[in-house]
Length: 86
Image (cartoon, rainbow, N blue to C red; front, side, top):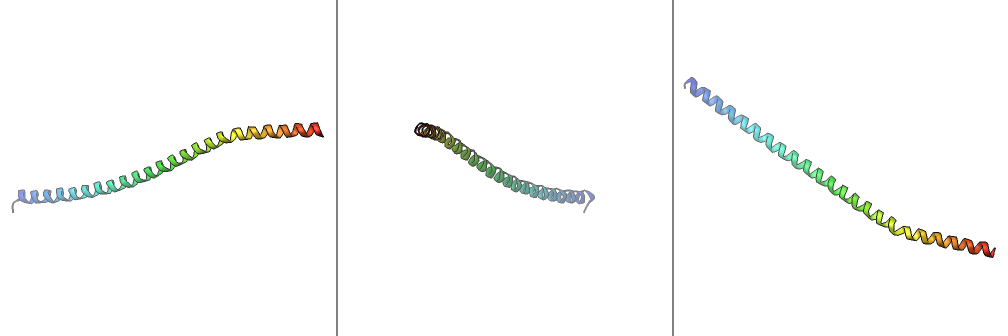
């Protein structure tokens, strides 16, 4: 075996090893990106759910406003009736 063929063999093995290392790193990065994307998606769903909940609470507050106004009018009327009859 000549020096050139020995160097070729060493370079071939080095390239093969580096290719394997690079492939493993890419696979690992892919799994980590998938995990991160899954976490981000879960967070997005939670935030969307909270936004939806907040919207329903605001609608409920808006619906209760006329009720509280009517109750205030009722209490004022009752107070006037009690004062006039008392």
